[in-house]
Length: 206
Image (cartoon, rainbow, N blue to C red; front, side, top):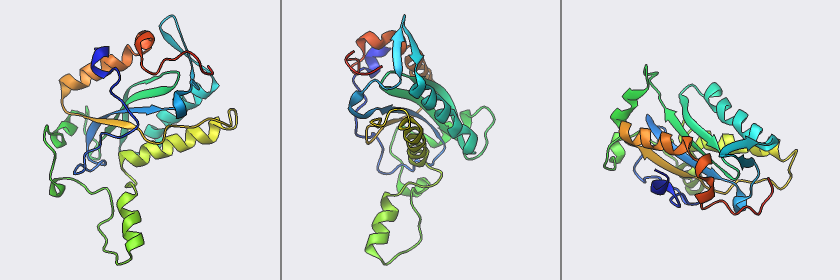
């Protein structure tokens, strides 16, 4: 299982151009620290031991679910220099959440089939139009990640002023139950596979 994801997540996103990231769906997220520094703790006997910054990450991740009505969280792990998590966007309050699969296809959706990430309000100001196009929707995955990273940074820098995140993050749209189960397994076993992780250089602050 580890081989499937080993070395796969990078700074650039895997986001689809024609997919609206406030659509109902399951999303596999990876966020790395700046320069892959080990800010969050260390692995001991195949278990992640969080330090104070790691505890901040844990608190703020689960706060995302409490403050956003359409966000639900599944499997999650904090590693020394990155996190993996499954985020569920469910705008219809589906019981059991599995109904969100209906918006996920193995093909790219045409623009007309998805909720837009930006306002459809017409603007004649080129600068305003550009900002609208690059700004995430208030209910989108991008906004959830932005607010999470910002909250962690604000608290973490009171303890570790040099703390920072990698600029971007990796996301993957989970398309079906089988894929979900594989990713859940990968996240769960991630600490035990740390010795094989491409982000493990054992030379930075823990």
